[in-house]
Amino acid sequence: MSALLALTFTACVDEDEWNDDPRGNFEALWHIFDEHYCFFDYKKQEFGVDWDEVHQRYAPMINDQMTTTQLFEVLTRMIGELRDGHVNLSTSFDYGRNWSWHEDYPSNFSENIQREYLGSDYKISSSIRYRILDDNVGYMYYGDFSSAIGAGNLDEILSYLAPCNGLILDIRNNTGGMLTMAEVLAARFTNEEVLVGYMQHKTGPGHNDFSKMEEQRLKPAQGVRWQKPVVVLTNRSVFSAANEFVKYMKCLPGVTVVGDHTGGGAGMPLNSELPCGWLVRFSACPMYDRNGVSTEQGIEPDHNVQMTESDALKGRDTIIEYARQLLN
Image (cartoon, rainbow, N blue to C red; front, side):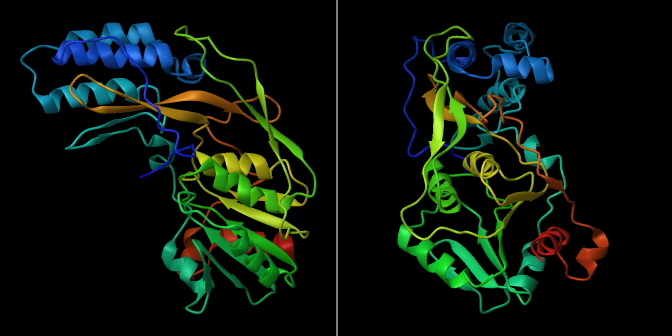
């Protein structure tokens, strides 16, 4: 599952030399996070994570007799303590991750039920599927910000949907991709420049070595812009760049967010490498909403709506139906 919150932001971090053995790889991984990870204070507040205590607890598990698989399991468990979807350990045989941000919750999305709304004659422009529903409400589904969409595509889509009473913009199960795509799409829903949040950068090895807050400002697009009400649909799998998109949209007039709490992922990731060649990814640049509050653990919708079993048995999407009632 890809959830990159960057353009092609995959720069590596230079590290000290460590031996290519279990102890050396353990120490390299712990120090990479100790000096470059950006959410230690936040994770301690939310989950009680003490990175020094984590070292003390996991260090005795490392020994020269352990297998490669055992080392991978211990290292994955250690970084999993951070409960961060942008924290990963990549090897040729497995992908270390903690996906509790969506696996511990109902999906609140069904492709089979979505087909009941899209039908077979829906339109496709780049990576967006769209149509006009039978109550004259527009419906757009953008499920992956890794798939780029051009200005011309958005002009055509929004022009086609212009006669509608309102628009449902469904990004459920969108685990992120390019931050620029979140900005490009959100820019179609504002007529003026808007402050949508802040970002910081790591400036040193200390846990609190950060730059000053830098403003994130959203400028209106040059092309066709939507002028009617819009409802954004979310679930727990909305993560990373998609989480940022929801943050932007909540700052705009005429926008309502419906569905479940998003999955979060508010740290722009960087990559590094262990002595054994395993790749490490971690959150390095924290981002905040316009009130200076972290959205690392997700964003609450304006209306928290869960899909019901009774609706599912009827082929109805509870969240889409709620949005249609709001727009009508």
